[in-house]
Length: 437
Image 1 (tube, rainbow, N blue to C red):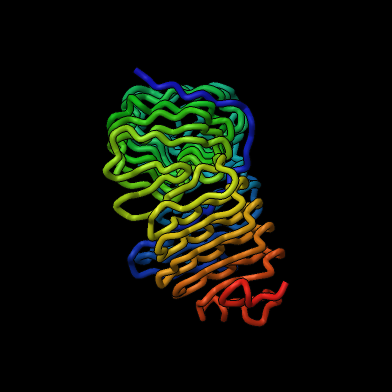
Image 2 (cartoon, one colour; image 1 turned 45 degrees about the vertical axis):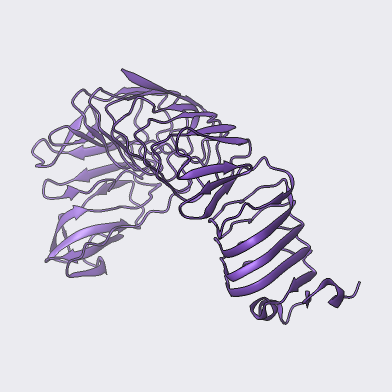
């Protein structure tokens, strides 16, 4: 049995931040010398070179067997490449997961039949035992690809930026879909996810044009990874299994979800999983009421005493429920909020909590309790003109009020707030009567 995932052909830009993991071994970072093939960066690990980047412009790239006299043991990461069309991998060099996946012009991979850890199957790179699909060349011709039976894992970025693919058929028995696995597959319109899949990596489906995502049959799946389907602008329906215990940061950010049903099994929710979901109106809880509650328009983590997110369709003046913390990106891009009242003791406002809320005009915090205001909390709120913060403020982060050209008056009894706005044109007083009209 398989679950159906529907895609449309719209392309959305996928922004990737790639970093090579550094092993906890005696290492030195180097750039290949004049006598070595140009453009390679590597780590020296136990007397061997591990390639961590390539900055050259070769269209036909051969991975060197030595660099500066050191044998090359592996490629960890070539980075994002737009020129490399072919890659030749010698028998002595291994590949780490995702090492060559982000080469958007790649047409061909060359590996000998004698390579001890790699093999080609119809031009697609696999592990030697054929259990892991490592890289489907981005420019490989063909609109339909069937992953061979016996494949148990799709590697990191394995199908990243494959512009010709319209359909991928996954086999029963598949267990893992790696990080960024199907990012930027702009024409992929049909794929079925086997219920055998137990792990799906971060951003695995990011910026695809899904219309629905049904994982309800994947009862071995424990986590919805960070940014799993972020940027899927047409994603309007998601079904999750009752096995899910964690929903990662921004898992469904910038999608078309109008409603969401939270499984009773969920114990942890990361940074606003619905950031930028302009159509979201309601979050339904199905038995998780001891850990979470939805007090419209806020989803509240009861145990963490935190407002996780605010549904972006809210409009007008709102009052925050009684919590001591507002989470990162909680009300990010909530364009309908005009005023917000926080009458209860408040200890923390997470970073960018109200950023880019363009209609926001007034903010009133009546009981700051050693309040920490994070970075960019009210950044780019061009309508914000009146701010009241009463009580004690411990710290104010970088750019907390940047981009607010209409902010002309601040009412506060906090020395920290007064010091923050000192030297600006903003009028600060302990009461409205202290600011002349």
